[in-house]
Image (cartoon, rainbow over all chains, first blue to last red; front, top):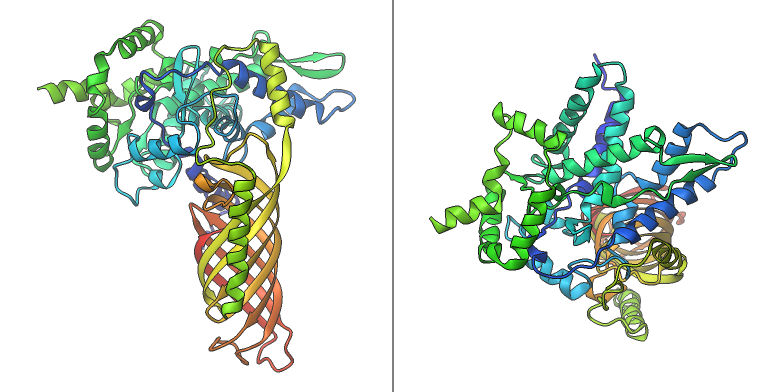
Length: 322
Length: 198
């Protein structure tokens, strides 16, 4: 009899345990028109302090290899299930966010996009992530978790498959791995929602990990025998309009979409408000086609993914006005 | 059994009074702290101060479960943990530390002390971790059974260990206990339960 390898079982259990953290949903429509202070400098400070503290915790002589320094950093940045940066961002007085505090949280949970879906739906058993702002881009705190956690999945895949594929195919294969992960374990089959914003954050997280040793110049520098995390790091370099789920539409399964569409339609009146029009004009200006979007377009063309455009606010409002 | 119910109720009252004493309002929101973006150095100092500004806090923990041999039971207890001062836990907080629980049930009462880790939120209570998203704990337990408990004799005292795991509010526990009674049919009792909480 062929036995199932123990390490495979362990990996599956670990991935299943990821579900609660990776299945957090968010709603940027809810924050439309409401001011949020920029949190980029605070997030940068948290990342710098966390990584430098990790590097300083192991002062080996001679200094460790850069890859070992990355391992130290990633152990602090990414935990098995809930991610430290998100736990911090949703629970402090520095990072401005919507909602904030118990009363606002309660109202958010009663009204966010998925609030009216089936009550046994897993996503509703979890707290929806609040919205914050960096460089005039709004996104859920779950994207920070994806950045460090999903980014590490990608980074590990990248290192494991070095030499397996032609260089021009590597990114494509890695992103395909990411979409499968989102489809099977973190999105569609678990919560009924595939977040393209999550995929973007995963990919940007991969770029961050890759830049630690291989950036131009690297973010980790050896100075006087000590690894130093560069103050050039800026989370704003990685954040893009694709992180905002009111701009970059999710893909929903049929049952989830019924409730979401009704909730989303309630924002149609706001779609042409000056604030929303201005924000969407800014996004339009900054939006470029990312490697993830290229892959998604390819999968849509092949019929392997539903077209996300049908789940966007413009499509919902166009149908509503017909 | 009634006298055993007093302990968890007292713990609940204690936490309610603690919440008021700490001045936690119904809404721990407070004003946005950064209307003007700080410089990188200012932000670094503020975050450094914020991360260093911690205190020891007691949080209430609770559990309701069906288990063998207690059958139905409700636990109340508390966990001692170090927490940042500005964390109101209206969103999930991560914490770890020593904790205790007192758990009266239909066929006995269990007292436990252990170490655990959890991600949970307190909502409006500020200090009662009523929604546990993820958690695990190892506990030393003492169980006193009574009434129609399935053990022989029905009334006996046992001591042992329990492992507990919580995911999305649901709690799963297993334990092994040894009877301290010389009249017991079997020295060892395996306990298991499923319920809600931590």
